[in-house]
Image (cartoon, rainbow, N blue to C red; front, side, top):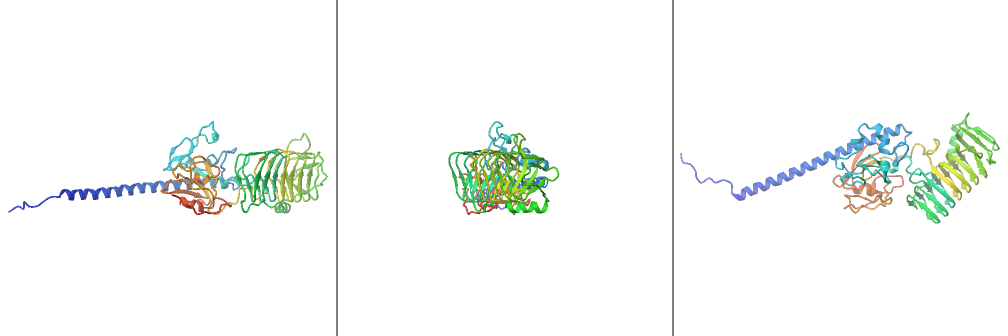
Length: 444
């Protein structure tokens, strides 16, 4: 048999081509595997957010429908509040794409926390998470402590403290003068004019649409028709709530400084209220009373009340006071007095008592560089979407969520318990709050 000695192997060129093809195929395979791993991490993150939302909804079922909070409360903030409802909170609070702690504000690739216990955010001590709460679902987030349909005027010597976001709200406008300190935010349907020795720890948001306090007349009529209040005289010197927590005065109420309050409850007044002396009687401490009045309320004396004060036609504070609760006026609200006000949750008859009415598919938790955020429609796109807004600017809180964590997207969970991946530009299309107006933005 004759052998063929002319058969040739691969040429160098052919070998190079084969190797190049293999390199391309390997690169494609590696990229595909990397993308597959990223999609697996995205799925894991979505699962985490879904579990957090379920825990928050379970928390709400045990707290009169109120979702967790975005700030320190006696029960803690959202992470601590939902911990009893999530048996794996430490793992579920960490996104696989941002698992490394940052020792402060996070980024697209790092988690926020832990924080310096001696710093202003010391209440976050010991916590690390890749997610933040939408402040607008917090039960104290936009429920105003002070709300008026008419002009809100602050012109005395007041301190408004322990107030959640949106604490002082007027559907008309807000004017301040004198010595006023506000530890919260101002919101107005019209202008906000601040002067005098004025201090505010929050933000001022004028020209907001659709701001309106709850109807005092509706609240009055609801209590009258459903809670069977006991009629008492407008000249009474003792209000005893032990037998019935609801009492009603048909007419005006002008206590002369000797009024004593026994127990706690709600007083309805069909006329007006005028307090020119002590309320309650001097030396008897603070009255635990909700006051719902169809007419006007004028406090020109010394008033010590823990409870909601609701005025149908106008509320005036011109004396000294120590108030804890909510102040609502369907007319103007003028505070030219001197004292301290601390917001407390609305009483059960207030429609806001169980937390605000949630919007359909409202964001609840999302990938974030910080514990919380209150996005506004006019917030700009962060200059660096890897970092977000590291300054935690109160006027640019969308920058806490607009980060390139998942291929130009973030994961968001909603109040219906679902969780979805949302492109960054579409964050400006979500229903963050009732006053949020969607915007079209371009994200690089």
